[in-house]
Image (cartoon, rainbow, N blue to C red):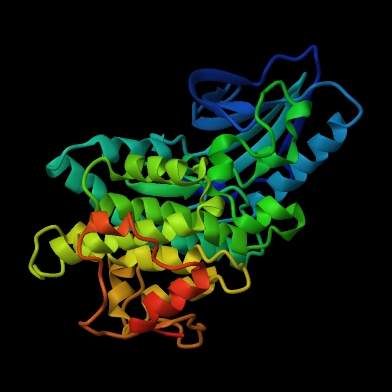
Length: 395
């Protein structure tokens, strides 16, 4: 789809079709299921150009609240339609037809981050895995820029997880924006509740406790979960992401990050154990993905703070990766796409810093990566902050 066709979208792109009408879109192939509906690749039947789109279909049951759900979905789509960012899916329009509420988007993705992470985790060491890890490292800065743009536009995503990050060629896109949460399970023909098993895995602790407290900090937490999984693939050996999932479940009976605070600390410590043995003694190590990936566990630590009032913000994260004196995090910025990369010296000096990195060589590491999984790092998150990050962070 050309950029011109996307910028000339009319103000109101919702259409209502009656029972006597045909579905205005032709389905070309199924892309996936989830969130109370399905996603397929479609083409508008009356479109002579033949452009393809992604369509999310939510099947709404007839009932007293059906129209209310439709209005909420339309309002959400109107909010997202005004977003214009290289890493956010483009919303083209919405329509209703019989029991279908359709959301039309572009581009049609090749895959999503959930599938990509699983594929990389199952790969053995070699060129294929290295190329995939290079993409992962480059996407972290792009995702931070995309999230910061959302928050700058006063939009909360509310459902960040790997399956809601789409991949088209070598570009990532945020999608979904919690639209599925507008429609509770009892109003759809799907079986997903407000929190499906995968959504619950990445949701912030304050959102589990009190739905009303879902501020922008919940997005930072959820993206922090994603970053920790990316860091796991950059630093750890093949199979580490699946091992991390099992480790959380064995410790607490759930894979939910919000219910695995101390487990997360142990895993971050575990990754640092890998890094200190493999990368730190070999500064010229050719595995630059593991070398530069060291920033990911640190960023995840700041993003996964259980207290939303202490959690780093998206704007502070952008400052952290784009400030020249903080070159430890600079690799996240340096390897981002051309549209997201900030040249050193061109950053906004007014961006508030959450933490400042200290370059020191005497950091404490576990003797082995396996040792970190056997001994608790600290009794709680705040204690870990003081014990561990005090050595290389000024707060």
